[in-house]
Length: 40
Image (cartoon, rainbow, N blue to C red):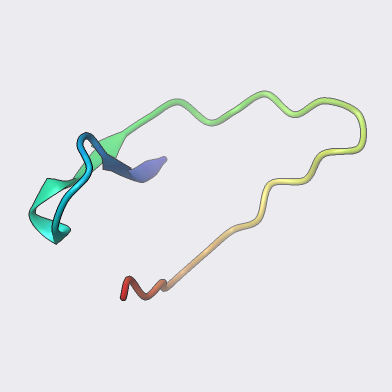
């Protein structure tokens, strides 16, 4: 799955798109599929 990671405090230039493993869910947790986001 893709994740936007903020490596250091600062501007949007600090954001990186990385592939990460799908998390293993525990009881009472949900995984929400997102098709679009916005960053202000």
